[in-house]
Length: 631
Image 1 (cartoon, rainbow, N blue to C red):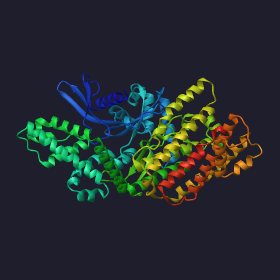
Image 2 (image 1 turned 30 degrees about the vertical axis):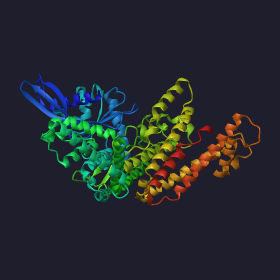
Image 3 (image 1 turned 90 degrees about the horizontal axis):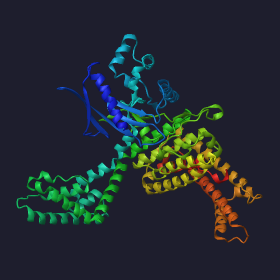
Image 4 (image 1 turned 180 degrees about the vertical axis):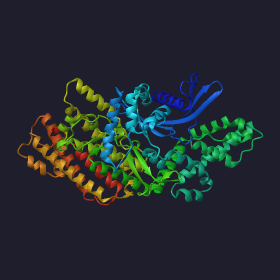
């Protein structure tokens, strides 16, 4: 329904711009039309009165995925590029609306000039209303303060800040671009694969041509598709011989039709007038042929996909490295300003800078910068004693958030040894790891783990109904979440190891310092947690220090001994399980400490993206993935 409300709102804006006040009886309408290259929907909106017709276009698309905990954002093209944010819950009045804008302005001022921030303002939309601008021009120049004074004096003008009776926020994006669209333009894997299939069908003319384009060692792909080509030509010739005496189809046309079908496009069979009346039948032949040889088709499509992904990476390696550096600069600037955004993601970020032929010069770090669009969940982290004086919103985007986004400050303080600000900074680090993965691969990193978030919300609600401490719920769900996140991280980094290991980054001194400081803090957290784990147990009260000092191999051996039942000591099953859990927790904590120390030693200006990712995930894990059995 939000889309209809947005379109209806801009029809109203179009009307006040195009029709004199009081001129009634205009009929309003809209229809969806071809969007062209716009990554969304385009609409023609129309005003009609008798034979007089006024029309114009507008476009819109949802920004980011729908989530129950955050406002909905849309990009709209109407005169300018606009971002519209619809609050999750309706705002009660104009003053509350202004307070929300003031909160984002405060964050923006804190970050200025280090980070570009796009924040809501009234002039973005009110500047398009002729009556409002005429009223202002008589008294004062248009400004945010002037608009606010006018809307307080004449509340009827507040309707131009509302959709479906609800206040919404407007931001102007005209000189910027969404970061997620920039990443999409780098990868664009589906379209590039389709283009590759259709453009290089001549590669199957002979083995040498195929090898020249795709390299050696792919004879099975060549042979399989060649067999498919010959089968189609033979089947088509037999069909035309039986049903069309006037058919004249060139060999190149047959191949184009086959490869169009392989690329998922509608073959241009009807362009050949001699078989135009048989186009549907010929396409059915193609469909049956490809369905009957699925193994060959799937092997070819997988081969092309792999080829295209490698080509994208090779062609954009420098741009990817610079973009990653820019993301890390944002992270550094946020930490330096004591600000945590808590909902970092590509579609909440913008790109600003010079363009050439409509595209940003991504390989040149001096030509552009990254900024932030939505500060709704952001928080200042420089309160008294380094803690927060208020509770920020419990919100985020599943693929870029952790369970800590969903629990209030007291629960975070009880579960984690880190201060609340440090937890919020780690939320941004977790999101940054996901963003870097997206830059390199075009895909989301924690996609599977994100599916746990709705269940975590439900678990929290169940705990509240049972009057269970929120800290206990957080400890339980965090353990499950981080088991999934760690497994998914290791799996996907392993599958893409070649890219990450072969992508080297040139880090600025400030970034190196940030990583070194964070690694030291994380290592300290792990040392504290190891001591806490050893000293809080009652199984070996006189051996706490030995447990703290024990190497991983010794702890692993003890764990396996108890698991295998090799100990002669007679104890209950419950105690045995507690011992296994103790050794397992200490072993896991020490493994993470070893890994963190190993990656911490290689922090330097020139580092592989693989090492950077593993280091950052290790730091996050040390801060947010702790032994919750020993609270």
